Image (cartoon, rainbow, N blue to C red; front, side, top):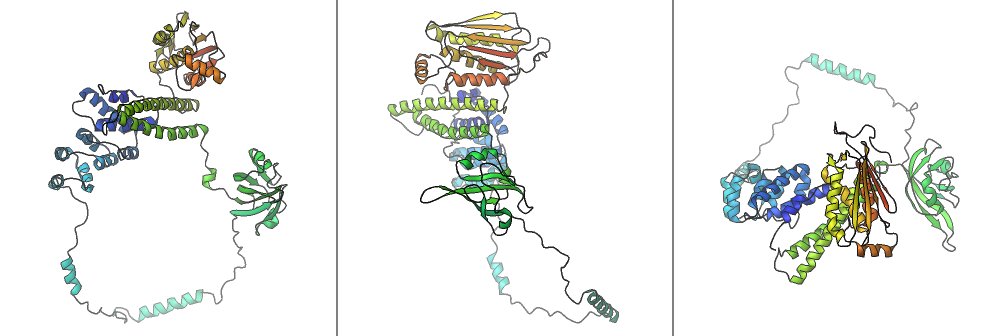
Amino acid sequence: MQFDDRLATVLRTRAQSDAVLRTQYRQLLDLLGTATEASEPQLRGEAFAKLDELAKSLPQEDQSRILREPGLRLRNPELVRFLAVGEAKPAASAMATARLTEKEWLETIPQLPVTARGFLRHRRDLSPRVKDLLVQLGVGDLVLPEPDHARIARIATVEAGPAPARSLAPAASEGIGTLLRRIEAFREQRRNQPNAPRLPLDQQAEARELTTVEFASDAEGIVIWASEEVAPLMVGMQLTSPHSGQLAILDNRISTALAAHQPLHAVPLTIDAAPEISGEWRLDAAPLFESLRGSFMGYRGCLRRPVISDAAPQDSEADRMRQVLHELRTPVNAIQGFAEIIQQQIFGPAPHQYRAHAAAIAVDAAKLLAGFDEVDRLVKLEGRAMALEPGTSDLRASIEETLERLQPALRSRNAEFSLKVKGHGPFTIALDRSEALVLCWRLLATAAGALAPGDHARLVLSSDGSLIRLRLKAPRPLFADTSAQIGEVRRQRAVNAGMFGPAFAFRLAQAEATAAGGQLICKTNRVTLVVPALTASSGEPSADTGRIGG
């Protein structure tokens, strides 16, 4: 490997989620943990500054867990000293997983804080010289010394004499008056106690609250059997019918499952009948079928009162998608890491064929992770869980810069974009320049991928002082409808804005435009972007527009 730019690549990564923060923290630890003094000092300093920034953003528990992951290499004394002055939990993990030579430990330990030295007392793999140094510095196990067994033995041999008997006679200070007062108090206590036990005739037995009821219903949903204590109250009640009865009210969404005779689990049910069985319930039931003909016979199940876990709100679709992305990132990150280990021959020489395969796998893994980041960005934007980076930028300049970047790819196919600007602006929007460039690239690169050789697409940029409009018209549809068209487009495409195709790219651009206070309208071969303009005087979005309604 002639040029190692891994550290610079990690520093350029934009951390947009907690998962990316943890990944970047892990990568910096791995790269700095094996860095040598020969590496570029300025880049190494930027990496330590970024590591300190990430440490302030991540909880101590996450840092500690990452530092204790198998395969992490902490062989750099400078990194060990850096981690030792941090928070307690990450410092303890760093002291437990650091792998320094004896010479490096002897040079590093005197520079460590007292707390970090104390963490080293638990290690059993340190050399005798290192342990002697810790003893000289006053670091030892914080346990009580062993007891003096000889002294204990001497004390144990002493024969215990008989304990002095406690005198039952009253003290000399207690006279006849004290004794008389005690007798009078005893008589008064006996006088206040009844001669016979009191019958609880005016007390009612406390009703035991029902928490579980078993039942069986027929094919019509009528209860034909129930637990003994509630049988008179429930038998004859319409409970498992697709149509809710007057006493038992089921959620309308359960009607389909009941009509199809499907099992039920934790179905909300409200009963409005006798006080003993009224209220909220959860229904668990299984359908019963006749063994010979297979005809439906009814349900057998139980009712239970809801608990806290049942009442807890379920995860939204966006939360479930983020959980799926997290589960997908974990194996892909592992595959990418092992591929880089083989490609860079970190653990030893590898054949060139294996290294070539590993390089291809690492590239594919990087593409997958980039795609996961796009899906995560879309989910967060549509769920309003994130906002675009605020700032100011010139949309016209961003469009022109993006067209300049696309020009080499379009020139080879004799395709082009033509930009026509109407009006003199302003074309300033309330987005950071990086966010504006990402939005322009997503729109124009996706459209460029749909252009065939010789195609010409027109762009019209206009502004009325309050709204900025960008209209794109292509000579052919921007979306592929069939699998054959998709394959043809992929063969012709020289540039694209993502791995999930133009439909996903435009949907993500639509979410970004909405987050910027505007909207994106996509049709067959036309795309219109509308965003609010910033007023030249105050740098605020125009009061005439505000957020555009969709």
